[in-house]
Every structure is written in structure tokens, then in C-alpha cells.
Length: 61
Image (cartoon, rainbow, N blue to C red; front, top):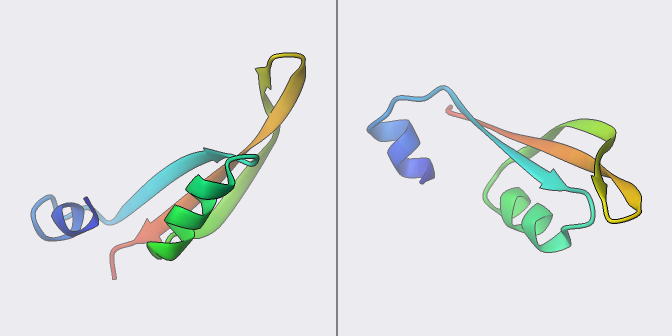
């Protein structure tokens, strides 16, 4: 996906949104080179509680 976005689609950047509790997704995006770019506190209600949403960004350099 990253290679296609860079070489074929010529995108400048990619974004990913991840629930803060999703440790596997956070690790996956960090391992792929994405950097934490933002945080939305109590962004979505899941069951009886609100959960934060993390934003990751990967720049095409």
C-alpha cells in the first residue's frame, strides 16, 4: 500500500486513525514508519465509555 501510494498514485502523505486501546494497530503503523500526529480525546463511545482516537501520518519523502 505504501509503495503504491508513493510510486503510482504520487500521494504526498498517508493517514491512519487508530483507537488508543488497539496496541497491535499502533505497533503495526509505527513499524511501517508512521508517526503519531494527533489525538482526539474521548472521540468515540464504545459500550459504556469514551475512547481516544490516535492519528498517524506517513510523509512521502
